[in-house]
Image (cartoon, rainbow, N blue to C red; front, side, top):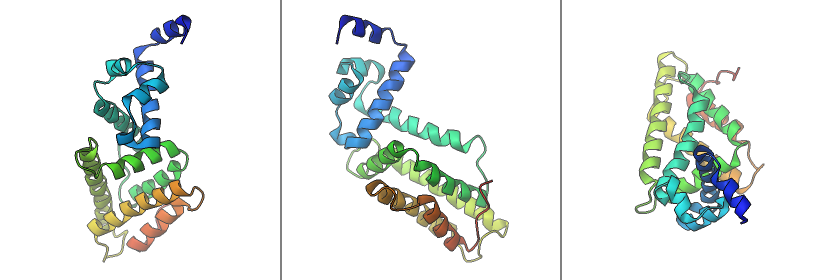
Amino acid sequence: MTREAGAARVRRPPAERRAEILRIAMETFAERGYQSASLAEIAARVGLTQAGVLHYFSSKASLLTGVLDLRDSTDIDELGHERPRGLAFLRHLVETTRRNTEREGIVRLYTVLAAESVTAEHPAQAYFRDRYRGLLALVVEALEEARARDEVADDVDPPTAARVIVATMDGLQLQWLLEPGSVDMARATEVVIVRLIGRDLPSSG
């Protein structure tokens, strides 16, 4: 690196540098997994020393937390301040799978880290456990709202249906990553939900 390039790099605003580190870390974790990726590799790809990266993130685990928070912010922005209710929330899940086909990096990151998190002492294990609990609770609540409005079949069991829906979404993402174009995730997700609840979903409009 030339002295001029180094000086230009130092002058970059901290927020911009932090965002760049997160972006590179997200790409690296998605490609190699958390365990195989190293701070040295991430630092080299950013153009910093390890000490430079640690100036913004205190540890590799802290960097992982930042990456996961960044991923979550995308979902929060899409959901808005007030989540849809009843069947509208299930339609939201279908539309989320549709949008996921346009952000392969985020889908790959989630799939890789979720699988890794089942290993002993993985720093993201608590995150994914809590995330699954939270997502399941939201789907159960939406199904119960729909049942109260007589929008789903009487024999629907919300906790069981919620687990099937979440498992379907995760399984389809894995198939799509392994063979892009082999599956229409949104259509397949909607088919499963409609079969489970015995009702069509409202339109996305």
